[in-house]
Image (cartoon, rainbow, N blue to C red; front, side, top):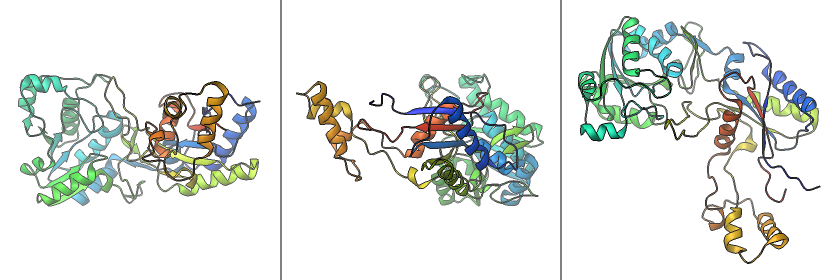
Length: 397
């Protein structure tokens, strides 16, 4: 019988993962037990995805705010530093800021505005227009910001992050001065030792600061790149991708985990004879239209994946074929003509082919990781592993 179902995404329930657990064994057994319990079978090119959280937890990749403070002092000193372009997040940044504040005498905290890099808004563009403020050139002090805009709380969290971050810094024993600006070089009017906290624009920010004469420039990706007093670390991303674990501890982004995904792939092949793909995923890469928040606060969607997930989709647009090439056909004749076009595809890229316009030219890991992030959620679903089936199928499969 002809298959009537395309891509299916299933959340897989697993035991609660603890440090030192054999994740390859647990994930393999959980997927196979789910298949038996729910009556489905694994197929070649299925994708097994693990949330980065359980990988880092199994690795024991944690650090304390004291560890962060020690590395900040070693790399930026303990006097006055500029901390620029923080994202507005209690989970992602606030605990890192506590570690930073414990290291130094004073922080000049420079917010981008009207929003942070991932879309968390301090202000609206309408507010800027009404106040006659140009965010590309105007630098605002805290006093001027309050005079013009008063108190603005985050739409979803109800937090005034300007006050929240300032109070947090003071509670850790440091002085704080607040500035609002979008040109990185502005911070050099206050200090020449700078920690830039942006994620996806960090390379440009660092370059501009160095070109403008900063004495020391670090990014969050330069902090905890090696263990400090026995802490966890991330050699490639440092503090980027970290999350709050407790009030005094963070869970870092997982360290090198290519061996893990290859191990799971091999175990599934041994037990089922099926060649699956495996990836580790964090935040999905999508934007919320209501809150304007771009979800991707991790440095990448997927820090590790098997080689079959390299690349981008190579697809034809069915509605283009139906409305253009085969507009004179219908029914079985239309189905066969479209099927023939799909079968005639080669492995070459379809970029520039009109019949592929409107398809999604994004990395496979970004697309599948976004699907998995939405499937697993970030709360109490208890499904930190996601099985995606049929993703590589097409109309002829």
